[in-house]
Length: 447
Ligand code: SAH
Ligand code: SF4
Ligand code: F3S
Image 1 (cartoon, rainbow, N blue to C red):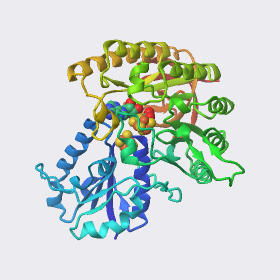
Image 2: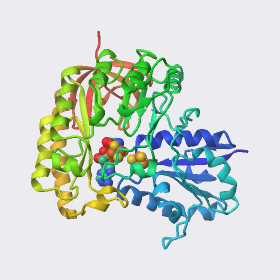
Image 3: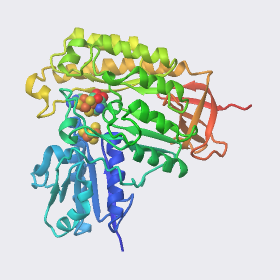
Image 4: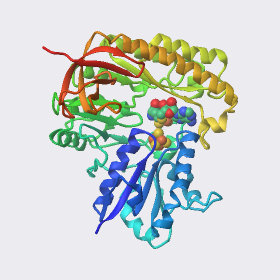
């Protein structure tokens, strides 16, 4: 009989994609996945280190899981992903919280999981946190164990070496490396044939994707890759994240404009609207260069949705620099944003070079100001859609009401409308009647 594996994933989309690799490796070796942690023989937490609160969440969860050991002697609890890489063997030491961790496995070592299991099962602790400069898991077919059957992720590259001064990712994920484009296109084709209708190409800096091999006649950059994937079928929607402003080329915008199935939604993290803060962040662009990219998007892709990431209260941020961020948000009119308080991460450039000197209350105040402004901008963006018709890819029943279905527009907005017996994967033309800051509400347009 197979042993049961339960995986819980924290952090970014890349981690969710990695969990599907882990599921694939493990199901090839006498394990089967379960969505109930109580019946599991092995529990993996695939973790995130991006901010302190992300790590605290995982530590609390680890503590909460410990009592399961009494009901299930031999239960294995493993920490995978970025925290495994950052905290290493410190996780294996039983600490004052009484938390026991049996396995610690970093993001480039998932192929080794089956070999590590016997050690963990025999009561020895198992660890592999070796980072690789080559691993892309290109030959592993992910097991989409928690999928809705319509949308899927494909990791096209791993690692990051931009070394933004606040960021832990280059340390937890290692060097940037791109995956063979042929394996990406064939994975997209297989997904389409299996009924999937939307694919998100993932990387920490997707638009710096670069495959040098000449097997395709020439080297492949991100615009070329995107066009190849878009060519799989006009019925397959393509998204991608995350783009770095420094690599947001005109050639990429041209590819999007030529291919209606590449979604009109670009996530372009700004982080700050102040050139001096961006310099301390080591983001490699100025306020003006960021504005230039927004203008290029508006010009080549009229109506394209633009979303962003913003950090409040970075080291030394003056009230004027904070105001620059608010002004830029207003100017850009972002449709959506992820917004965070700066959280110092040990070992990063910022931790070594700058003082984390904005008091907690002031960080909170600035973040609240940013969130409030974004809510107004998001509502404005959604209100502008009222009265228009959008094409929605149905993902499933609405969470709030089983009489409604929910899906997304090309602009990546959630649209909820009355169910008329649709199936996940159907495309429906929906007239938008009303909205909140987070959702569009409408009904099918009758011809
Ligand atoms: N590779 C992407 C995103 C990486 S992490 C990019 O370059 O944009 C996602 C977001 O978390 C970042 O865009 C940033 O806004 C935020 N973030 C990263 N490190 C952080 C830190 N130490 N404190 C607060 N927010 C952080
Ligand atoms: Fe972190 Fe910067 Fe790399 Fe994004 S680009 S993962 S923020 S170092
Ligand atoms: Fe978190 Fe690692 Fe992703 S730190 S954001 S899980 S790359």
